[in-house]
Image (cartoon, rainbow, N blue to C red; front, side, top):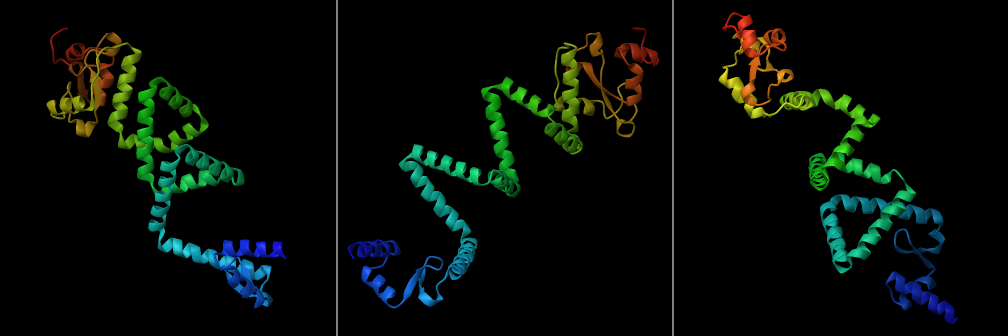
Length: 270
């Protein structure tokens, strides 16, 4: 009898009611339903009704969450902040263990949640990635470059480049042109460098005309030419650059500007 009273005391304490109230409910032939969290008549009580109550309670909880999502999220974050301030290491261990259990139960769950969050917060995710890459480059530039090279050579990286290259090229054509020129200059050990602003100033100084024949570059197209070619020791500085139409740039080839202008009859013999 004592053990039965003790068990009932424990149950009443878990339910948050007095022992007398719990005994009165049992005497009236009612049992506690863990699904709807209330007493029901024993004749109406079964595992099926418990499941129905749990489903209804779940729908009610999801509805309440949807209506008060921001407030509940703020409340949870505040609770987690208080836990972290109380014991940072214990809180980190708790989060690691929680993530480990979730991955064990569903290995793809975290990846799906991360992808769903990224799609909903694309700008924030990109900003975080840029900050992370900037910090990584500051800590170890060579390691970061090696990581990018390794990823670019992987099948996933190549597929990404094939899909993203056309749009990225159209958005950043000038940057790609400059990068290609600088890369070629480095291979030839040519001194000097220039920027996009230098290229724009040079185009404005030439009034949008070819340096050699005076053709309107807006109609004929334009190429950035080195007056003294890099293969003949020319520099990559703005002073050695000019805008030319594709025809003149192709005909000039490895000649210097003076040699090509003489060929056109516009200058004395070099």
